[in-house]
Length: 142
Image (tube, helix red, strand yellow):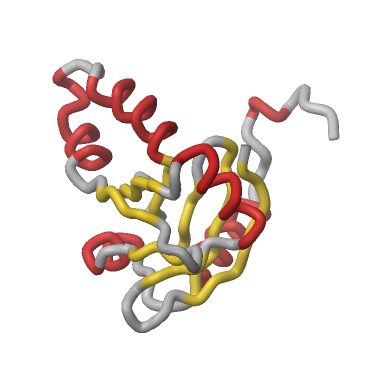
């Protein structure tokens, strides 16, 4: 399970350096193989390959009414390998889709990561913090 936030800077080739605390887990559980795709909230999702395969099967089995969402998730997915130094290349197409040029935030979201443009994430988080919490948290105890 992945959790926590990391501020990252993509290099000039569009590579991100996976935080050390996640590298060993990704090497052991996914053989350093990842899949990156679009998220409907404007960020990217990064899955260990084994988790991606589960997600892909769920998406692929959706009915025809979800065809556009299949295209968004599956049609934009790119398989990548983490190199020996823990770097992952994020394609120009996916970087552009998420508005990521250099500064980014990597969020552990359980079985996958979200990769956000740092400024976009900060603005969206601030906006959410101003509003009411969703009803699902009404009976949630902190």
